[in-house]
Image: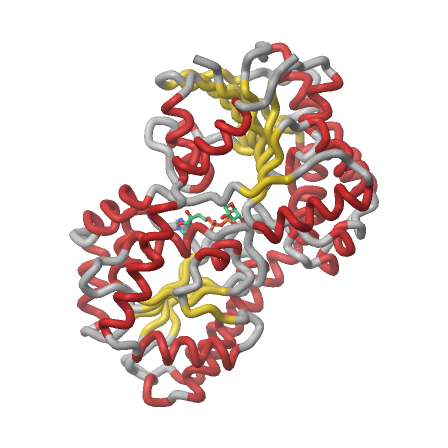
Length: 447
Ligand code: ADQ
């Protein structure tokens, strides 16, 4: 059986290798089970010096070998914090104004991609299937081809790809697009992303084509998690605290793309326009801090603190807190159980490649009494989740109206909407996503 080589910026931490937790690791679990696998990437560690003598960490768990390297402080700053997270991330989320572009970081980004290629190439065999993930590694395929790697190489972009009229704000955009030619398969999340990327290829006369491979979750295991989680003491305490009143939930990394400020403004409008809900509903927002040293994320945190304080100070009572706000991650089981306990979820990113939380929320519900998903039209997930209450995340009145609707839908209407969403979440799973991408790579003819 052919070996699968996964390359991603971050590789699952050692403690998560037996039982992968969250995100990419969970999504790839199925693929990893079907193939012998090498997973290569950054160890998450910063190393001293110039990196000349950096070691390759190798660890094998089952049939997966993890190979990782550290990054120097300079590489961490220029490649990860700088060009990846303060240039490509905002631009791909349609926020060119948040780009903090400089040529130095771009050069470090290019050099880390070359470093990845240099360390990975000697480990590759001609019949490997190499699957590269995400915006940190756009040029990796080209760097591997420059080293005469003949294996099949695929690339999947987890975040949106904007229209060319926006993407070209990046000085290196034409070069990045040309580098993508090195990949045998290029995958994106939605038809919109594929249209945008293919338009860019057409404008630049590049003979390459993006295809759509929407990512999903493992809904059976998430549902099982949500059911098992009901016995956790934290869940029982929250249930007692709610005294039968509805819970609204939001779960997102602290990121400006997730529309958190706009969402809280929507909740503020909801309490203003529908005073009958004051004291009668609780909103729990769970938002672990991420990329805390990028300036835009620091100011987001300060603004979130401010608006949560404003809402609680304006509407709160001695025995009622309108917004409960946490800034740390929670174990998956607890999160899933909270989803099941809640009457509605607010998933309102301004832009999102897919958004797995929307799918997890649907998967966690019990058929007899499902909660309602309020979902941004600008999440990739919205393309196939029309039975959610779809909103424009910039419009606080629309969010307020959707909250009112979610909390007043009849049981039968909630069930009809949820049944259709459920079918979709079980149709497009993480395992299916991985298998169809790998199948597309297998179909590529090698010379
Ligand atoms: P993210 O931007 O990280 O992913 P998302 O798809 O929602 O966004 O995935 C987040 C994951 O982290 C979910 O599994 C969620 O349960 C978990 N998570 C979030 N908050 C948490 C918390 N407080 N505690 C514990 N776990 C938490 C990127 C793209 C997305 C795309 C995915 C996968 O930005 O658009 O859907 O990759 O391709």
